[in-house]
Length: 393
Image (cartoon, rainbow, N blue to C red):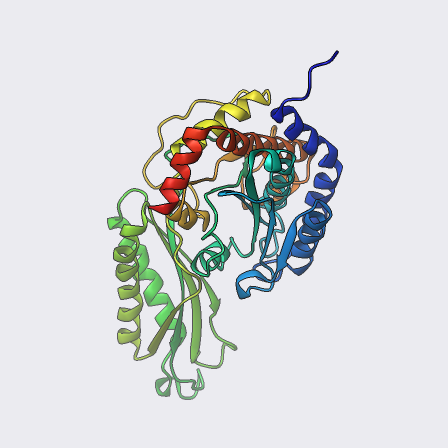
């Protein structure tokens, strides 16, 4: 007589039963990219699939039209899984959020196979606008994570990364508008106040500032509006900038130094300056060591040859609003490797990689490793008690 399936077997079987739907979801998102806070079709696809899997879905969560929450089960422990689904302008899913979404939905569905038996809740959080907008920060501030004990997600990368120390930076983004006075560039240039010149002065000052930056500090920006016609002195320019530092505590210091470059440019050109943040600040990732250790063990159990963590240079990596979540509760954001990927995130090649068979396998494998990690937590009385105590503290 064959042995009864173990809880791990049942979790794996649930993913296997949904694998075609999960791959279909990933490809549907990839073929129909939507940018920050515009992900209406993506959110509805996620909501529909989760409702069919037995979840109670709340659309438009946290007063964000493209956010959602979906819950299954009851219990003192709530295992949260985050699903991103926004794309990049022009590049589509060049950061692989279609893979993130499929993996997150798959993990949440897989955990329903054991949630009733072990007495815990599963909560899928559909989080919009990670690339710019800070959907998770807004949802965190508005209470979506208040009932979540731990949270997980995976991010596609060229290779698997399971370093508990994290590899990310904090980022602050803002828009700077210079306002001058228009004049005819040929007949009366002296009557104008050139806002485009202010943008040039600011960028030159920032270029000089870069010589004195510490390792790990980054400044990047674009000119979104630099004038209308060559024969009109530009009266308005708009720049979008971001500053990155290894930790959130260091962010304000660098931001002030950069803003001083803008203030000096306004003074030098006689223009006025208006600055406004374009999103909440993101802080660096602080992975929960126990969760990451369990995830790494489970990822290896899928058959992957996962490298041991190596040195992490200060201030390396991109930024994510999941960092804010990891500061608020035990959470992880490991990288799931797309085997044979030829590109890196935010490139056109990586957008191609994110729809490959290897990306499909990464989504399913990431889902399984996360679900097994949630199972390990729910089934371990000591770990479960520590996790619950940490959230009550």
